[in-house]
Length: 83
Image 1 (cartoon, rainbow, N blue to C red):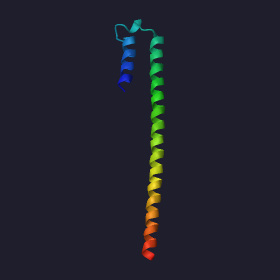
Image 2 (cartoon, rainbow, N blue to C red):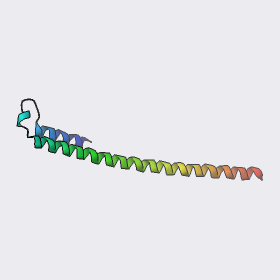
Image 3 (cartoon, rainbow, N blue to C red):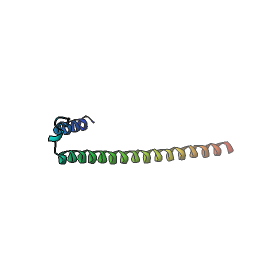
Image 4 (cartoon, helix red, strand yellow):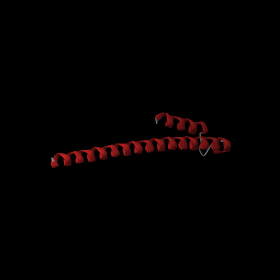
């Protein structure tokens, strides 16, 4: 995450947007930086979404296994009680 902040800081410093120099900054530079930042955010969001879905799938599998184990234990207990 610190490299992301460094990248953002570098881009902001590159633009050096202040009231005094705002007229010196080309609009195309600002658009390029904003587009780049939006692309970075989109990529990070996609990666995070994929990770979350993967973890939710893993949790679902683990819960299914736990449920199957509990049911198997209950069935075994019933059989032992009947004999």
